[in-house]
Image (cartoon, rainbow, N blue to C red; front, top):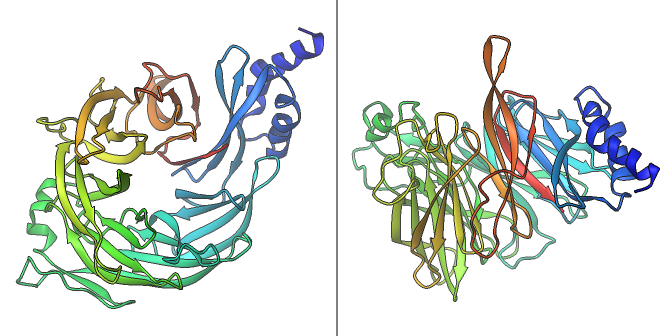
Length: 457
């Protein structure tokens, strides 16, 4: 190895970490990576990850791999555009990142441009309903890219908000529709659902939260009001599905054929008190299934999806499987909250916060296999999360790496502190198994949860 190469290796592995404290300028860090590291044949920049946390940061993190196959995560830039970024939506076509801020008042959506050196530059800022936690891009029902929109689930605001995206990738958003939901606590008929009109309220017939089964199950009172938590587009691009954790409903919206306008449809009621959080569609052999994770009940439910004659009518869901997220016949320990779901190949992965399956500070990731014929699931087992309170995780494009945000505890003087950690775990693409130990990790220097992870490859 030449003297120059040895000097570069010394910089990357010993001196670069010193530069990566948050006080170092973004340009100095990212220019070093772009100009020096990627030019070295023994160190390859595999990907860049954008990682948000409730601390108010969006970190740009580089993933390197050396000639021996060893992975290394390095912080190269930090952006503090919002108070509490809860969701990051990546528009890879235009190199824009959309930051949904949960706890700002009023709510905010911020568009950011990824620069050549991988730092983030704010483009625009928009007002939104309070409590945005998740979102999805969608087009009109014909799939035309000239009609693109962003839909946001507003947890605290009990709403679904939509924005039209500026053509050409300029990052502008134009408010389109807002659907607000509320309980009708004095309704006598608990089995009947009423459909609201746009910009009106959705009246859900159910007992008052103070006396409901849901309140007994949920001591944190997550069902004190409607709380939309997720937005999912069906595989045909005809519907938006919105799991409402507070109302035990899958809210449905038909997408117009020639615009991004939504038509509110009758919702689908799930198990009372279960708290539906996140869902994903899956297609196989011409059939479609939906996999729903419920936070309060800690269950994974599979539904066969039947399409009506057109999307002016709601989807029909037929349950084909249900299990605890920690395995069939088991009950999640008190305090467990099922969080996120991902499908990679024919495997379903679910993060379980607070189950302590691998120790007091080591929660779990559940793995299930999908039967491509009938949509049912087979429980493959639990895998350590390498920390506690795993919330968000995401796989790279090839499916052989999983990035996961957790907490770990460490001692500082006589006190025990928690710190957010980004963990990188290898995945066998043939079997779907996760490796028994992380291949890399990075302490983020904040005591708040990792909320979202985006891979830029």
